[in-house]
Image 1 (cartoon, rainbow, N blue to C red):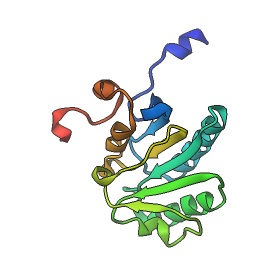
Image 2: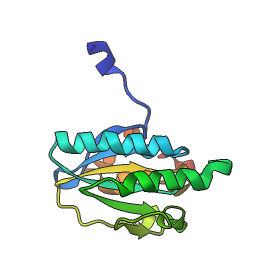
Image 3: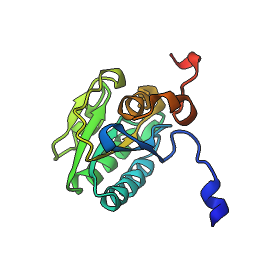
Length: 162
């Protein structure tokens, strides 16, 4: 078990990162191409939020590359989120209607990851999950405490992604 704890997860795959003001970030920003990846990620984030006594803020984007199942997958995620309680939801992307037509819960939309702005109190656990198209690693960067370590822990940090 000690050896397993030394294994480093790939960047952008459920990595816990210290956030500003004592908040936590569960960075799952590598991609989101299937409804189950988002649903299972939210469930994991909920468990961590309870463990660390944090308020869950779920930040997602629409899924890309889902082919013919795009509508049903967005509906599945929205229906799952409709049943959850005690969390804040933020959808990133100018095509948030892929989810919003199914939501029955309050949520906020932000057009792009570069326009994201949040008043951090420190009691949050941010779950960040999105298609690489939306570049949600920029949101993880915005939220993280030690920005100098971004190139070591966040995806898409080399110059070709600028």
